[in-house]
Image 1 (tube, rainbow, N blue to C red):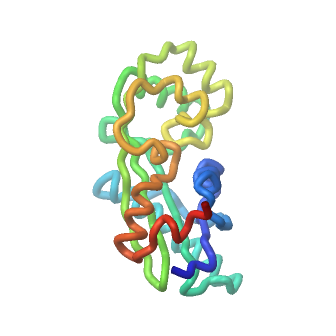
Image 2: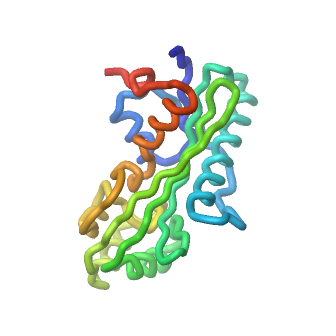
Image 3: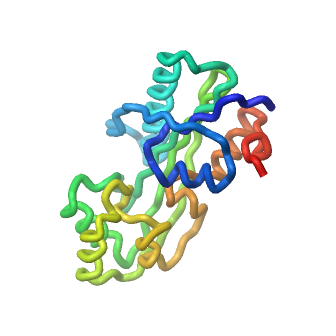
Amino acid sequence: MEIRDIVLASSSPRRREIFEKLGIRFRVVTPDADENICGAASAEDYVIQAAQRKCRAALLLLQAEGSLSEKTLAVACDTVVVYDGMVIGKPPDTAHAVLTLGMLSDSWHAVYSGLAVYWDGRMCDTFARTDVKFRRIPEEEILSYVDSGEPMGKAGSYAIQQKGSSFVERIEGEYENVVGLPIAALFALLEREFGILPSDLIHY
């Protein structure tokens, strides 16, 4: 399988780190896409629509710079937290982060990621879900964590790969999905829809 150009359509450093850890040679394109989805029927629909928007925006950028070809593999992803049926994205401010962590304390929530992948002239999508249980988090601990600045820019106001890992009591599903890029779901989509194997992407 000849893949000349792998593009990660994301501004997220966590997603870049996952690709780098796997040994995938890629470049980053930061698409300007509206992530606010109205009228989504479900959390799955919400994240898939958002990922599709990012992927389409990235393709337009690649087209504009003249680097889009049939051998370009573009990957876009969007991640949200869902608690009691409510979609929770990135906190707009520290007060929102404190409120979110207070809700998630001593309870389960779901992390959904939507994936949109372009290859050989067509785009396909999928989603992943991981369930996370938080221990009871005292208010003073929440305030200290928010003061650290780590929750900002993170869906659900925490980073499971950093200090936020101390809140997690149990996890059911793919860990990388909570970080922000479900690799198992991505590889499954690539093989199912395009016949692309992990060995086609990873440099061992």
